[in-house]
Length: 156
Image (cartoon, rainbow, N blue to C red; front, side, top):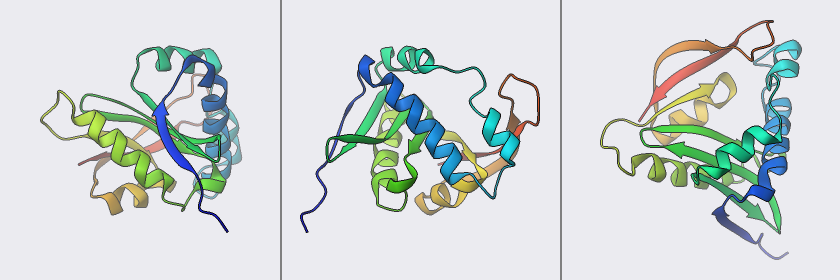
C-alpha cells in the first residue's frame, strides 16, 4: 500500500469553510467523554466560516493536506499556539505532532519567552508528551450561555 501523500501549506481564503468543519468535527469526535454533549453542541458558539477567513487573512495558519484533503490545521502568534485541530480520522497518525512542530516554530518567531496554549482536557496528554507543562486551569465561554468549557493553561 503506498504511503500517504502529506504536505503542509499556508491556509488560503478558500480553506475557511474546511477549517471551520475540521474544528467542529474534531471537537465532536475527540472531546466526547471529557465534555458534556451540551458543551460540545455549543462549543463553536456563533462562529461561522467567516471567523476563520479573518484568521487566515492574518497569514499565520498552516494546513495539513493528506491525499489532497485538508485533515488538520495550526494557527499561532508570537508566544502562543492559538489553535490546533485535526480530523478524528487523522488523530494518532503523527499529523498533529507535525502541526505542533510548525505551530511552536511559528510561535517562537519574534518571541523569546515561553510558548503558551490553552489545551482541552482531551488534548492535555498530547501537549504534555511534547514537553508542555500545566500552569493552571481555566474556562472559556462560547458566548451562548450554558456551561463554560474547562481548559488547561500550558506552556513550553
